[in-house]
Image (cartoon, rainbow, N blue to C red; front, side):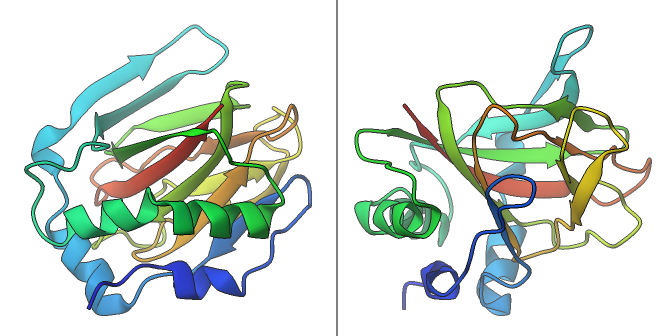
Length: 199
């Protein structure tokens, strides 16, 4: 049976404080989330970093929009997430017109000391869904997604845990400030699959 998180999302409601976002702690069936975590394509990851800019970061990432060569059940899962039914669901829930957008699918990993500084996404990034797949991540490891009211690192409204099977959906705006807390040295990897709709 093909499993996605669409059923869990169907009844979800977006939070509007301080900007539109959604978080579900258990968006995937536990067994399916574990299977995805244990087949996470870590071998494809490459380091990515920037400093001295408006958006500093250090992390590992890879594009998996083309699922060729990925193990089961990644192909079916990526196909479902990138499909029209999932796009229509997110458009209905968020109130954002996603018609005509381009889809990208990427995997991300934060290791000890990795982070993403407070920022607002680029104007052509319309909406992003993050599915967390770190099997061994635990509270205290860092790597939480901070929902912020302003770029001030201390002006945090919500601290969202990247626990296995959780998902977050972010609607881009000129004030959608967010960041990723630095991962603790020696912590388990903070892993995710990011689905992004581009204008």
